Image (cartoon, rainbow, N blue to C red):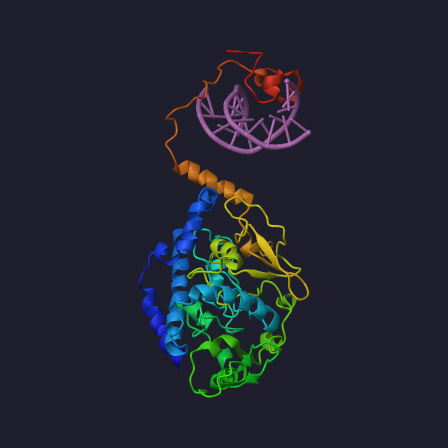
Amino acid sequence: MTFTFQQEDLKRDFSKKISYQQLFPLAMAEDVRTADTKKAHRVPEHEKENTRSICLLEQKRKVVSSNIDVPPARKSSEELDMDKVTAAMVLTSLSTSPLVRSPPVRPNEGLSGSWKEGGFVPSSTSSSGYWSWSAPSDQSNPSTPSPPLSADSFKPFRTPAQPDDGIDETEASNLLFDEPIPRKRKNSMKVMFKCLWKNCGKVLSTAAGIQKHIRTIHLGRIGDSDYSDGEEDFYYTEIKLNTDSVADGLSNLSPVSPSQSLVSPPTFSTLDSSRTETPCAKTEPKLMTPLSQSAPTTLYLVHTDHAYQATPPVNIPGSTKFSPNGSSFSISWQSPPVTFTGIPVSPTHNRPVGIGEQRQQQNHSVLSSPPRGAVSLRKPRGEGKKCRKVYGMENRDMWCTACRWKKACQRFID
DNA sequence: TGTGCCGGGAT
DNA sequence: ATCCCGGCACA
């Protein structure tokens, strides 16, 4: 129904290019700050392009959804204040909502092909529902893989700043690659709406119902129960219950321990950018800045005990402290601490950029930079035989110390 | 490809 | 200061 319309709409808009800086001033700022360290982390142009497109998608999703199911009220004037509220709500939501689930492995997706090659598809579209920072910046790590996206959208709660989720995330990612969209799971889903009001948790089958519930019960709008300013939107979550095995663990409405989220590698749990501000929009500074600035195009992976680097952050050149490839951070959860990390360690096709690769990149840039020989301060090479030649490698102990140390020979000076 | 040795890290 | 080595330039 509306999905069809939205997809078409999005497709059309994707053909338009929007200035990177225009969309992501924050990311640009970060780019500038970390420009030096990122020299070795050049992101191929096409990846940037993908990233841009994805964020454009994020924006578009908001527009679309606001046109369709979210009243346009309270868009701008309250945004700043609401960002603070958003931060609080995120935290609240973390403890009251099923945040993590295991996305199905979808080998047929267009995305999978890209990250097989060590290349990277910035699938920052992220499956809806959770933490993923699909930031658009050059920091996007080419080798940080995007896990396969999941089809089920999950909306723990809504925030004023992002009244979206009007479109399925996977579909969105498919749009990017003009892949046909497998929809089979849609049919087996039952959409429910759960009230996120603290200590409530009421589940209703219709959005109208849950909105009315929130309006009347929690917002106390008894008189004008038909009027909706959209605020209710923020207090309920859409839950898609399906019969798939993947969703089995999610049908449970209680908070889900992140450690349950990974079914089996390389099936990654994804965190959704839509839960927090995507880099396309402003973010609450303390909560999001490090992530949104430095976790571009990367779905943060929920770390448990498997193949992901745990804290402390790994210091990799070209990445900031919280960058997707060079870092991780922890959030203390109700039970086990959750580590979001952008450093997949092992899966072959999604290994991080290693030092060797960085060196290669550096070398590459060296090769393509200044024409050498402009000014060579290197003194001419000695013509005569040196210790090495005279004594040979087997008599290295007979060499002069300089030769032993690979310095200019002091015994046979030219 | 082997050699000389610069630049820089480690101790 | 000494020792060591990566890596570049050159033969």
